[in-house]
Structure formats: C-alpha cells, structure tokens
Image 1 (tube, rainbow over the protein chains, first blue to last red):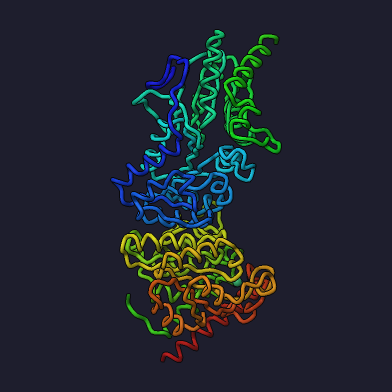
Image 2: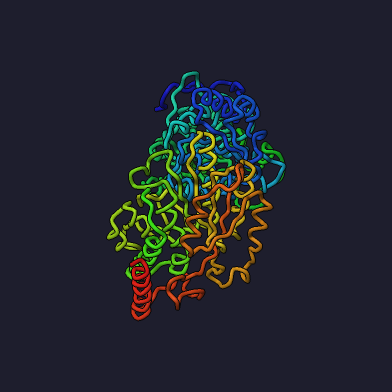
Length: 329
Length: 282
Ligand SMILES: [Mg+2]
C-alpha cells in the first residue's frame, strides 16, 4: 500500500513546480534565519546553485573556496568538526568524484556531518558534454561507508530532504538537477529518509526511479493507466540506505520491474535493486533503464533522456515490451 | 601548562623515541624514519605549546593538532599516551585484529581530531577549523604537520591560497622537512623547493627552525602568529631517522623495521643519550 498522503489518482496533467535547486536555496535561507551556524560552502558555484539570494541575505554564512573542490570538502569537514551545519555545494560532476577521497576520509571516515550537495547532477548540463555529467556519483558514493545518499524527485522531497540533512548528525549527499519539476506529492505529505514513496499504486509493472527520472515514470504510468495497465511508481529518493522492502514488495506484487535512473546503469539503482532481489530469491522480469556504458549521446538533457528512453513514451514502451515478453513465456 | 626545562624536554624526546621504536618493533611495522624526524616537534607541541589535554579535549576552545602526514602515527601515539589520552599499553595492539590503533590516525583513538593519512588533506581541514575559530571569535590555534614529499599533492596549494585569502593567522603549518620520501630524495622525485618562496608567494609568513633543537622549536612555536592576518609556515629542518645513527638520512628506514640486533643497537644509543643528558642536568 502507498504510504502517506500521496497522489493516488493518476491525474491527467502534473502541475509544474520549480527547479529543486531553487527550493534547496530557499530552504537554506529559511533555516539560516534560525541557525547562525548554518553555512553554505561553494566553489565558485553559487550561481549554478541558485544561491545568490542566500549570499545576499546571509553574506556571513557563505564561504567561497574558489574553484577547488577537494579544498571545498576538506574545509567543510573542518567547519563541521567545529559544530557548523555545513552545506558544501558544487556541481555533482566535480564534487562527487574529484573530491571523492576527501568525502571518503575527511567526511565519512572521520564521521563529520557535512551535507554534500551535488548540483546540476546527472545530465542536467546536457550539451556541455560528459565532462559536466555526473552519471557515476551514486556508484562512487554507494561504496563509501557512512554516508546517506538522497536524490529528491520534486520540490516536496527537496524541502524534506534538506531539512532532514540539516537535522542529522550523519554525512549526507544530496543530488539535484536544474529543471522545473512537477509536484508529485500533495500538500503536507510525509517523507522519511530511507523509506521509498509509492506515488501510484498498480500491480502490473513497477517503476523504481529517483530524482528527475521519477516524473517521466509517473507520466508513463498515466499512459499505461489509459491502456488498462496498472503501474506502480516508486520514488526511491534515498539511494543509501536503500528501502529493500519496497523493492521486494514491488517484485512480489507486480509482474515486472523497471528501474529508471539518470545515472550509469553500472553501480546505480538498477544494480542495487537487482542485488536486493537476488539475495531475497525473488525472480522477476527486470530491466534497467539509464545511461548505458558508452560515450553518452550529445544533446540537451531532454535529448539524452529521449535517446535512452527515460521519457513517458520510452518507459511506456519498455513496460509494454517487458509485459508482452512475459506473456509469451 | 607546567613548564619544563629544555633539558627535560630533550630527555623526553629520547624517551619517546625509545617508546615508538618499541611499538614499531612489537607491531613489526611502522613509519620509523618519519616518526623519528617529527618526534621533537610533537614533543614540543604537546608539552609546551598546545592547549590540549585529555581534560579539555571536548572543549570547543582547545587548540587543534591535525597530523596531515598521518603515516608518522607511531610518533603521535606515543606522545598522546604520555599525555594520558590512553594507557601506553594500548600501543601493544598496534596493527592487530580489531585494534583501534591502526597505521594512520583515526578518531577511534582518544586525542585524535581527524582520520588522516591520505596525503594533502590536513591543510584544508585545518583551514576549515581555523575559519570556524575566526567566525566564532575563539582564540584557539590550529597546527598541522605536513611532510615535504606531501607537498606534491595539489590540494595543499588550494588550501594555501584559501588560508591567506581568509587571513587565517590562527593557522600554523609545520613542515617536517626531512628531504626524503619513500622513493628517494624529495628534490629528485619532484622538487618542491624553494618551499619558502612558494608559500610566501601564496601570502604566508614563512620561518625556518631546526626541527631537532628543542630550544629553537620552543621559541618559534610559541611566538606564532608572526604577522596579523597571515597564516604561518614553519619549515622545520629535520633528519629522517634522527636519533638512531644508522637510520639517519637513509631512505630505506622510511618504513623499515629494525631486526633484533638493530633494535638493540638503537636502544643502546638512545639510552646512552638519556644518560648523557641526565649527567649534564646533574
Ligand atoms: Mg619527507
């Protein structure tokens, strides 16, 4: 059963919200008003992080390191060790892997609660090319002990995740894109770190997705609904610790499972879910939709999504295909 | 802090050298050469400079010590044990199954602030702590120990730039300038010199000290910061393997472990040194 107060009815059209990054920045401003120990640390990234309003309002609470991501993370760890609530904010492509050793040692191993915020994640930077894509950040960070990984799908998840990260005494990695995101939750809905949200119920196909890939899965569910196919859309906002229960339930209750991610299919949500199912002994038709192991196709984020089938239409077809192939057997 | 004489600290250094060799021998592993090059610095820091003790270790106002060259952990362990952070007998477990006393510093050990040992991390961490001190109007100081081989890590230079930009005069980096690293002479591996000019160009105040001269170390380490608004680099000229004649300036002792005969010879030499110092005192 879906948990909390979520959109049970598959509405015809999702209302368009704002970019999650804007909500991130506003949430920080709201928290900074009450917490003078809250700091944002940036690596020449306040503009891309939508943090200019924050910087104007709280100039004493933003630390600029210049374009130096390793230093950004080390400094953030030092600040956090002195009791500061730190949001180290930098493009995901640089933050997650250029600074991976600082994340591993200074933050996770040393156990200081830095909130690492990867902005313009996945292929948000689209046509800038692969240097600016982060389709490996989840894979890299999943293998690091002692870090909670959250990739919010919409404005509501963003607000809740940012507040949860600030309140936690554990290291966090938050991952945001830049596109305006449709609202997937009702006002006042719940949200728990580590507990996936079932956005639509259904028992034909399950889409397990995170971040900006959740909305297309939701739209695919709308299309499938019209065909009489029940699709369960699960927002797996927390990649670590993964909600194993939700994965297992989806596989037991649905005829097939499709994972959807704006990430390499290596080391991401698909592999994580598959491992959960294998260890549980649950066999189910299963497919990973994401970025394959090749030079990523060039183009905008929407072009790339379309190319790899991370769209309503693409996922609709993937669902019908996997369900059909199952009928044949 | 109860003040000891130079002579007392010199004896202490020899005693600490004996201790670290004992535990390296016991564990059959350790970074012997670097431990011996930095032990006088640590001795002076913990016994004459740092406002840090087991009693105030959770006090936000304590001075901080971050050992960026984490591999010289045996030196840190014996100093922390002698300050009462944990019983010295704990060090018999160095490197053992499930022991917290691993080959690089971790916060599982009382008295240690950060898990270090991957090189090029300590200066950034220290800059963050120093910045927090400035923000909170605390007057603690942050000391970090760097290796000269470590300066090849680019992150040091990111941190060096940041620290002067932020005018972190509460930050003191001490360079254990023993001129050797695991492959050979640092000047031949990838020459970091002139180190002083480089740091000055980055906006730091740089001074030199004899890293084995207790009197010199005391006077320099106690008089930082030298210039308001500038971070300080103290280049401590040291000898890798210092105090055990056959280890001095010999690359293989970077992480060499003495055999039984070598160990006995080292102990003899250090005990003789202690006796000489005792005699002088008397
Ligand atoms: Mg060296």
